[in-house]
Length: 230
View (cartoon, rainbow, N blue to C red):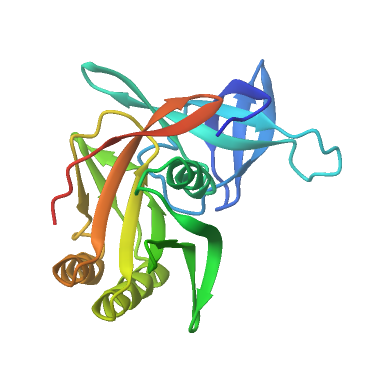
């Protein structure tokens, strides 16, 4: 996926979940944050960031905060895309190009029971569900999810576990919008129930996948598999 009009800036503050104050070319700009997660290790005063400007003059904010450079002692900065819509967008591209093999009838936002799953398709006559989770938290080479408790994510994992027992092919795809993580693991310290549910899902046949991304200020593309440690 590609962005259109991306410009560098410096992060200043986050007065609420939805907006950030940025410094750009000597002036203060208010940007919309396309991620309601904490992102506490990324959104630090002075961090270099990237804003996508909108052509819509009626918007309350002129731009969206889409990526941040994370400083790491002794290592180059790590560019992380924090656009919460991006993981599903790149997952759609990846699935369409054969990431899980040839699929038929791929469609997003599939309603089943009382839930809505990110993608549905059929594969050799077998139904397939893919639930996508974006993972922006990185610590010492490990990508961790979630960075805050997620009841919706927990419910989806448990529902996929039940569907796998009924013969569905079910996958949880963790998209790491960064490059270089050596492993992925559930963040047990933040939500033990999610870590337990993910382990139970894997035991029931749900595929737990992690893929990193090639990240640039104006683009994001799924790249390589990352080892999953449950």
